[in-house]
Amino acid sequence: DFGEQPNLMKQRKENGTVFGKLKFLDLTACNELTVTPDLSAFPKLEKLVLDRCDNLVKVHESIANLKMLIVLSMRSCGKLKELPDCISRLTSLEQLYLANCIGLERLPDCIDQLASLKELDLSNCTISKASASMDELRTGHSVSDIYSDRRMAPPVSQHTPFKLGTVKMLK
Image 1 (cartoon, rainbow, N blue to C red):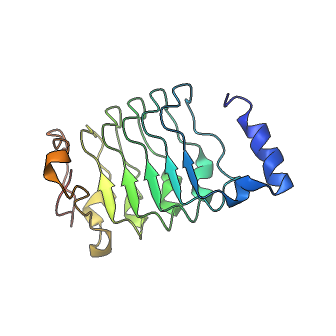
Image 2 (image 1 turned 90 degrees about the vertical axis):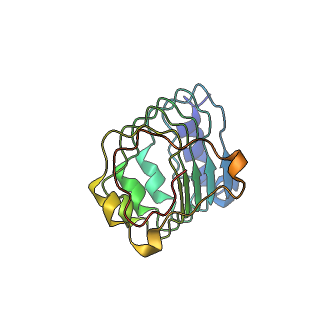
């Protein structure tokens, strides 16, 4: 039950227990989750998986505190409409997976500030409000083809109405 989770995390943080050392958190298919919990208790988190959280609509602002986060996966979170602007403070983020987030309406305007971003998966997303900064993704931000086997790749959305700067391939 995530309703009691913030208190539990606060208590664990104060006690300096295992939460502070956690590097991988998988909340796949937590269908009761509508907002991610306060993630401040996990300062060393490197990989956060929220795939198939069917009712997830909001990412808590505390995600900005995850300075060591390398992988953020939120595939198939159909009710997620947007990511918080504070996501730009994820200085270590290399992989951002948003495939099949059919409700995703926009990306943060500051998406170009993800200096370490190497992989971005927007397959089957129908983003209607393009971020102005998407045209300004620098060479260091180019998005790689994350599917080594094309037979495994989902079809590219035909509804992506914006240019992606230096992006060579979008899946």
